[in-house]
Image: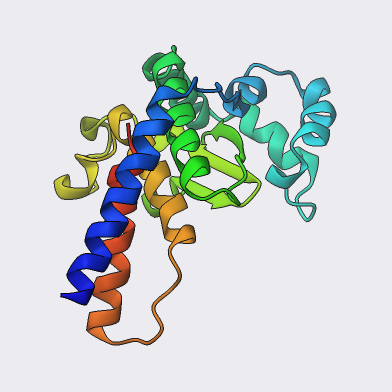
Length: 204
């Protein structure tokens, strides 16, 4: 009975907080389109871009590596596809803004990270990277299920535009929920249950 009352009280509190959040005016976040800046640039612009986004350019790589990216046909093709799918980010910007507002109202210590989109051509598991002050979104991992024939359908079905905000909410929730106190199956189940609960609440 104690645990029932405890969780009921928590649920009611969350409902009150969220009802208040939806009544507040949402402050729109800025989305920095790194992939557009990079692939629309000339070699002479690279120094300026590297200065603006130093965390995206490992210092052990020579500038010639990044110059080669600008001429890489595969990367250019991926960028064009990304630009086509994400030619308008208004809806996603609105969804992320609402999500951040909900998180901030529930967890006051949460600081809205700088949001940057890019084409990482990395593994699908790394399509969202959240590191406190930065949120990196690999748009090339959300180009539609048909774009990834080599990836199992149960995974590629989620690699579409509509899952961007959900994945962001999940990644942030994973950081907000304390890790399991032990490696038992029960502890893992409770942890992931909390993450799923928060993800659903934070996804508009």
